[in-house]
Image 1 (cartoon, rainbow, N blue to C red):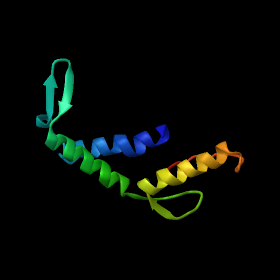
Image 2: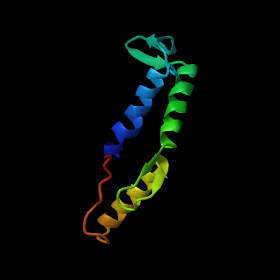
Image 3: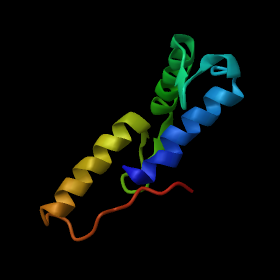
Image 4: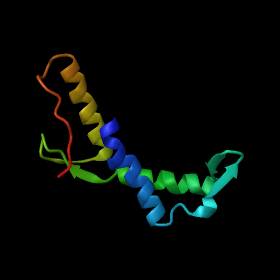
Amino acid sequence: MEPFRPLIAESAVLSAINNRMVQPKDFIAVGPAISLTADGRKGLIHAYERRMDTLVTHPLFDYRVSYRRLLEIQARLLARFLQCEIKSYPVFVTR
């Protein structure tokens, strides 16, 4: 799942910040820890869900799928590779 971290998680966080879905007032300092308020969590989850619904073209199958579906496809391809059903794991790359 690490290859998807910048494409999904980091992109969702940047989108939430850039679109002011999460703002400085949404963070609470509690001792050495920092927490999100309920509104901050809602904004971040909304940005994440929007990102998961974004459509991308799968390079192997050449059709458009959401990131949500893409994770499932890649997991199935990895399982097929680990079970020696395919010779190599087709890594998803953008552009």
